[in-house]
Length: 525
Image 1 (cartoon, rainbow, N blue to C red):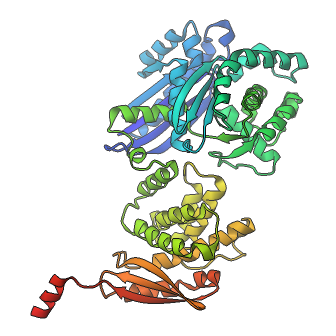
Image 2: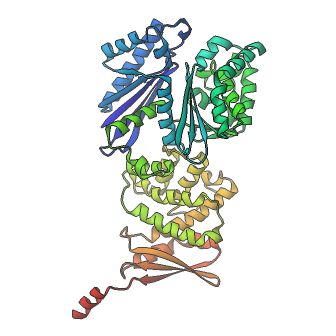
């Protein structure tokens, strides 16, 4: 089944299209977004004819686009602008009559809950208490999360378009305007933020377009532009405060020239910066993390949970990163035993060589994920599939990872065969020195592990590492005697790992003992 989830917001209308399998598995096929400013006349209490017509055109185009992709189920929700407008019901009825699309107007707390579902799928919320902030045009939704569970929801009328209309306007805000806005934020937010502060929350996850743009600006200011890879991109509270000072001291023309600022959000960035900076300061949070999944993805996930047996990935993989890697491999048609078997052998080598390698704690996970994905380049073609693997991993939607982690994983997969890493390779050379060392070490392990399953038959069951003076011997426990191909291939690819370890590598086959029944059968023959 193909499903479309549509979020009719106060600023923008978003759509996500996904392929959902019968067991709940899914992958995103397409996304669409249009800024229609449906709530731009929110102060009057009514949606303008111009805004409704723009919304109608966008929804009609989105529905046609989705139907051409075979979408069978539509799930559309409307938020602040439609639920507050006196003629919001007229707009919903018109969409139903003219476009044949049903829109469900949801309350603020439901909007917060669905946003939490979307964020939870893309960001690991298990490690520490977290506050999710979704700043739309008409309202701001806040979710307090502790150990992956949402413990409190809040929806307040502090949307960026609303705050601009009430306090800021379009040009440089005055000290009085900013003071009035700050007082309003205090009056509206403090009670809920007191509850958040009691949990000692130090991480805030920000979603919605304007907050994501705020994070992108902060990244540009420190010389680390996200370049389209925003999910899980992190900036500090101090960096947000600096952006707030910069945008509040600038007029509209000056803001347009700020690096990283989306020109469509030049009128809203001041309000977003004020809301986010106030929140971070009040609860004494350290960092703001970007999440590109939000309400529309939450609508999709909620639909799947209610109409199928649940999301298969979420049930099998608690870690959103592991879930994302598994879904990515399935999407590209690599669901066989080879990848997992190579990953198992690679981790056996890593665990026994960990002391010699002395790599970052995360390196073990990076190796496993690279091993699981090392052959996905076959989706494009067999020749140079290691290069295709790099392209797919570095440009795919792997959720829960920082950009630098994705780059390391992609490069480790890139170097699982053929040429080893070298300084002349542009992407490898761009890495920090420590990451280059990590890529070399993990690539060396992956090359050997992949060689040990050259036939894809799982001939080599386990690997034991034996240290002998200035040599290391890899004892290969096999299911049968015909392991010559695996030994030959692993030895051929072992040069990089031997170089990293600074020792010679030997290989010895330890065939598993035959069972008594097999021995009797052999004797009878």
